[in-house]
Image (cartoon, rainbow, N blue to C red):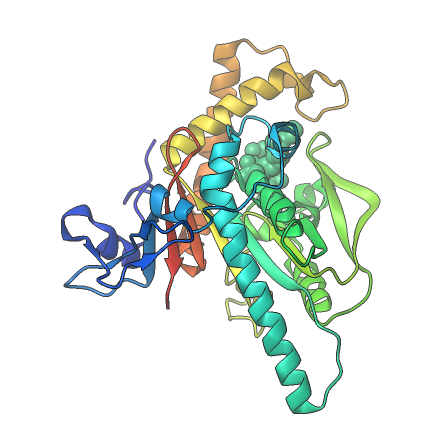
Length: 356
Ligand SMILES: Nc1ncnc2c1ncn2[C@@H]1O[C@H](COP(=O)(O)OP(=O)(O)O)[C@@H](O)[C@H]1O
Ligand SMILES: CC(C)(COP(=O)(O)O)[C@@H](O)C(=O)NCCC(=O)O
């Protein structure tokens, strides 16, 4: 199944800047940390692209010489079930990204301090918030956890918290009452007001802000469970719909958007055909592991044959996750500051960084 227009294509404005025959390398290509030339494809002669486009080699060179602060065992504990990733991929893709983010964090702190001095205001710094968006099964969780670990290992040793937006899903009972159980992950399945308030509180420097907690095994919100966020230096917020502009029930635009609280955003991208395959593979693997647990919501799928399980997963994809990707998630890709474009084997083949 392939998304009309091709999800494997970069966003429209980037597409113009990324088509191979017209590619040009910026004349002022600069020198990477290891002395190699960093080729930055900045656009075409005929159009302006908002993105600087990096291939793997040029992106990796940005962090050349940096030590990886994690080993294979730690990586295995971070990587999402089914997400194929190795230390070389971390060094190639995620380490340079963490370094870029670290630059942004430092610059934002300096600006905050300078502004506080200018205003004669002694308010404490507030968390730097990074959004990680993308489809179900694209590997957002691995990306978010890796960024948390890599950022925490940067020189200032910042405290980095991670929150997933699934905690803001409405409980199953509410979804059922509203006829939304088959729309889990769609914008209307979340308590968006609570999510906005949570981020507004975090960003206003409040002590101990609480996020509700979701359990994938139970497929529901955990009653009474909460995750405390207490003025970390950096907060990573991961979820399907974090870049959505959102609408009020009457169709008017709200005054505040989630994105107002983000200092940086990353969209994890891949072709729908690949993501769907990863989803089906993960479903088949979960059937042999997590679904075995008698308390798992999906336990009834534990004894399906391979063919039945494949058919079931494809059915969920066709009914829920595919339409959500096409209607609500993919359209937000161009709002991200940075896009990680994955190939069929989960490796990132290109990085698109917004210049505008
Ligand atoms: N039915 C399930 N049972 C247990 N864990 C699951 C289930 N579905 C998804 N997960 C886990 O939940 C996390 C989030 O998954 P998902 O929303 O698909 O995002 P992504 O794959 O982009 O990280 C992943 O760690 C995934 O392995
Ligand atoms: C819980 C999710 C909606 C993801 O939530 P997120 O943290 O991205 O807000 C998703 O993983 C999910 O369970 N979707 C429902 C359809 C399915 O079972 O695949």
